[in-house]
Image (cartoon, rainbow over all chains, first blue to last red; front, side, top):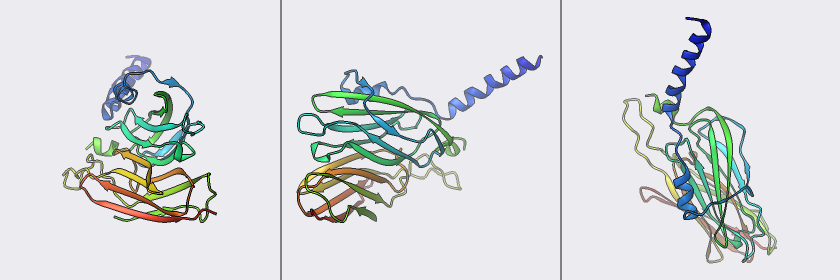
Length: 147
Length: 105
């Protein structure tokens, strides 16, 4: 066996094991449940999340949705979805014009490198979506999954 | 259940102020096992809500993807001096509550 073939075979063998540890969920059903089937507009959400999270057990997250937050135009909810977590629905936050500012910070768990999805619901049945990749060095749940 | 709530010492009428809250809770996912290999049952705070001036101003539905000792920062527009209360409940029905006094300058 040539060295090149050996390396290729090795890589092929490793990838499925890692993928099986935490599968990536299809998040479309989660998004559809929020938007009732409507297609959300891409962009218009600022996400503060480390590009590389050292520890998946606690990753600081801030979501900010630029909106006037008056009676006519405001954010009603912010939903956070992690496609590779065993339960992708991380949290839903409900806001209104009384919030004054559509910004929420928290700390989340991430079971591996993945794309974090944030869906914002706005008044007038409008929706926005942003996906943000995040690399996780030490994932939450992995040690449990390997037991 | 213990928690801590913090609001600015004084706030300006008509302007949003930050509300910081931390709840002491393990947020057990139900995926972990103890040393004997037994599953540690799931136990998470799944609801948290904030009321101010007699109305709900923030509500969160939480899953196991929220880190242990859940921490949140959110904003509320100041309109009158009075208590701001944050209440939460876990999936076993255990409840907790913290309050702070909002002073409109």
